[in-house]
Length: 434
Image (tube, rainbow, N blue to C red; front, side, top):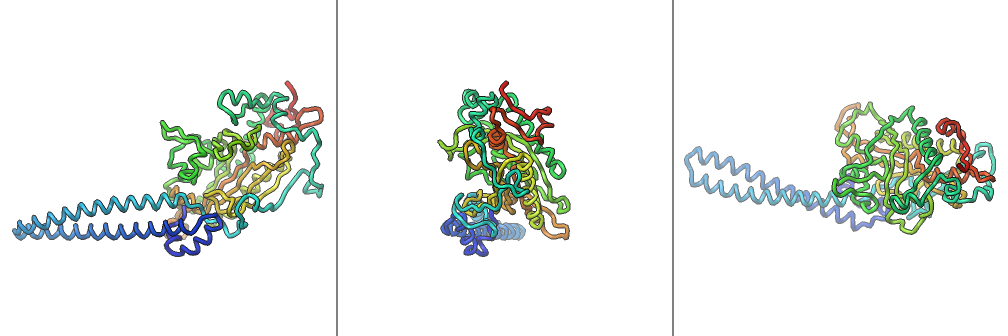
């Protein structure tokens, strides 16, 4: 969440910054008013507490002097003020809850470097790559046999069974078969091996507490997008970013230990409630998918290099897989609520003739760390400071799977997979009918 001092000290500048995110000035003013009420009520509570303390001292002095009647009167005043102090304390807690709730819904301030804009149409493409791009080859032209959508290829080769998935769990839950399932496992192993030089592999739980979801900003604002197990009050994670962000929740880290980098492969679950009726064919939009996530805690000074490293790693994987892709710099109006700066990687899907997002590489500044209360102790001394958090998919596999089978389809209907996956597929690189 944002630091309340941004509202106290320079609300007008914050209004300008958040206007880029589509937040009107009225919300900032509402929070500012709540904060004034909160601090006023704290002052009232503290004044009452001081009076109670002074009266208690007078009661003791009166009793030591034998003035029992006066002591009784003072004690009655003290009890009355004590009751008022408890009422004031309850009001302080209530208003504090309102302030926190309002801050939890407020988005992060977009980086000054993020482009202006209100939605996806204003995102800026900063580069694209395809096999042969480095040698100056023109953008690829795809053959007609590559223009077959992956759900038809998967059905024909017996490697993707959307019908059985729907029978088991409902629509948008895929079931992979044979080498189609092995391909997912191979992609995960391939990616984790590429990241193990700098990122500690983690296998976190995929069901987490409400507080864990709040720490990343997924709750309370996006509860409709998440799967909730009400009986146990646990949430199915939409991304490994959620548990990784809370690994150090409530801790103070040593600056010398930063950056801390983690890689996690997990299942991810999203209701996609806001996407009803859109992109429901095949793997374009699914409720359950596998993903390798990179995550880091860093100091503000380290954050830029860490952000660039995650993006470079994600791009490197897509290049090794031989997929045509582009990188978008998301505009302020299209950033996720918690993000200050995000780069999206989209691969080209020749079968559906569209670009598919496979990675979002984001820098959150201290927005998430404030929610999770993750700080570090500066090496030069001084008070603990909030860490910055960063994360990126490297990569999300459902759409990568789709792009691979479409791009790799050959004229005879078989699919050729990239050589980098051979070691993880027992030497296989061709998918043909069983």
